[in-house]
Image (cartoon, rainbow, N blue to C red; front, side, top):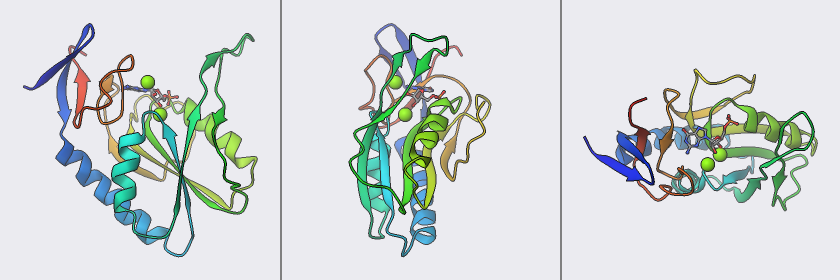
Length: 179
Ligand code: 5GP
Ligand code: MG
Ligand code: MG
């Protein structure tokens, strides 16, 4: 079994680049079919989605725009706890077909906040694609239109996803050991 060590943690190989790319082929084929003639704007969520966005967009063959945002992440001072806001979006999305490109949906909290904020700018429609979904961890009622791969709720790294800043450059996906 191929393993990697990142800082204090050991990870086992879980999904190879070949498996990931096959799943991305499927999502791209569906997007090319569903979004033909719709002039979509793809909004990729940095940092985690950079590798998925790159592989996906190489396979999207319809005319489209590609843009990048971040979600701010800081502890709120109120009792509501964590507050996250989209930043870096320069395009006007009013009347547009928007496709959010995410790395992973875990509880769905981040995606539910993104959707709430984007809806305020009156796009014609918002579609969501995520490379990975942890169905057993999902707590929020969100519409996920294009899921490349469903995985168990264990912590993973690679293909854009990090452990404490490291591991994003790994071409395969690794799962934390002993979980
Ligand atoms: P959610 O808001 O859906 O609970 O969590 C979404 C965010 O948590 C992701 O965008 C990602 O930053 C982080 N996350 C959730 N699960 C994992 C995981 O297994 N590995 C890594 N590296 N990040 C994760
Ligand atoms: Mg993310
Ligand atoms: Mg992270």
